[in-house]
Image 1 (cartoon, rainbow, N blue to C red):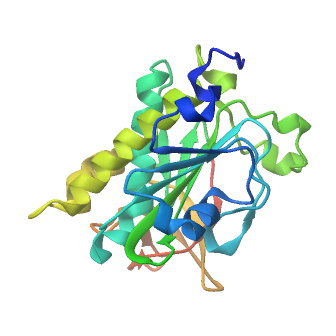
Image 2 (image 1 turned 180 degrees about the vertical axis):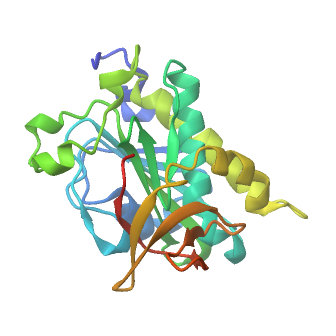
Length: 266
């Protein structure tokens, strides 16, 4: 059940919120706001709004967030360049861990390469990692999590509504916004620490968990990469977070970026 009350810490007076949380009544995009205010933000800061009016998705696509979608951006500093290709997947794993902590009755949360969290064959959350304004080593991790989303009342077409799911539809208890933000921040900071630690294995340390939750594994898919459509069987996640695709003639293709246009549902 989705309810809000004055006693909910997530809607307390802003001066009572922790220093790391920047609460906006509305904004075009939390990622855009975080990049524009880079000098005011520190490692681990979170920008949150209930009303995002001009969100962005992967590949420059527009992303419309209906009411009830938790939209936030987390600032991470000093991420090594070599770790960037797999950061969206690592962030997706952090989102899964946060949800699993607060809604333990949910099972089989999965990651769909390159940046979606899936539940029951539907999209529960999406992630967009972008450069952090004027700081070359900063990454802004944008998260859109369907917490109490009323898709039926949105302007989304029916074809898209059938592909999404919200926490309130499946969780016995829906975590409040503040609890989710706090837990998301915790796991993303742990992820950043893993990726930046001296002599760290980086993404390699997360590969077993990433591969265990690979939504596309074994599916026939079509990927759009720079206008080229590549069809094949998804056979796993590579060491740097790339999609491994087995083509029809048997060769292995490593796809480092792109959009999954279609996947079978068998």
